[in-house]
Image (cartoon, rainbow, N blue to C red; front, top):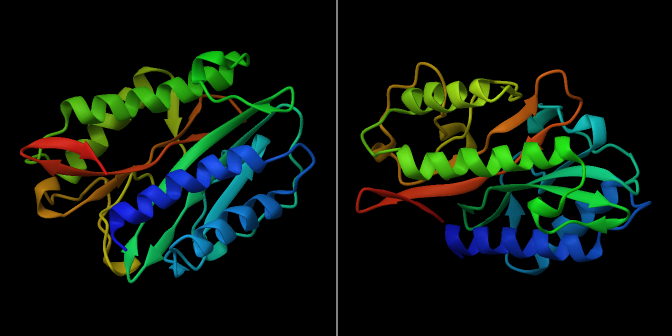
Length: 229
C-alpha cells in the first residue's frame, strides 16, 4: 500500500461516513465507523497516536489539541450540525492524512458547499476551498515552509479568519515516523522541494465564531507544479 492508496482510502472513508452518519449518533460511533472501515479496507494501523479519526462537532470544532491528549466526545449529532473528521491511516509506514468538514442540515448531509443554507458554515467551507486553490496556484518548490506559513496566514487574516492550530502551523511533511515531520511554521527555512510530500491543513474560524473548519490534503511537486495526491 502506498501513500496514494492511503489517501484514496481516506476519500472512500469520508464518502462511506456521509452515507452512514445519522442524527442522534454519538461522535464515538462516528469515530468507530471510520476506523473500522479503514482497517477493513487496507490500513494496518493509525500513525498519529493510534487514533484513526479525530472527530469534533458543533462548538467543539474550534478545539485544536495534540493527538496524545485527544479523547472522543460523547456529543450527539443534531439535525443541523457541523462535524470535522481528520483521518490518519497507515499501511507499512505509508501514511494517509486527510480531513474534511461535514455539514448536516435538516438531518441531511449537504454534499455541495454552494447548497449550504447556514451562511457562516458556507463561508467557512468556501474559505477552506479558496486556501487550497491559492496554494496550488502560487506555491513554488523553492519557497520555504516559513514563507508558505506567512503567505497563507496573511490570506487567512485578510478575509477575517483566524488560524486555530494549537501550534500555529498549517501542515507538515510526510515521513515514516511522526517525530521526523517538519512543519509549515515560522522559523522553518527548509525548502518545500527538500521533502517528498507535505500536507496542507488549515484549521480556521471566523473571528468571534464558535465554529471551526478543516480541509486537509497531501501535496507534492511534479515538474515544478503543485499536485494533490
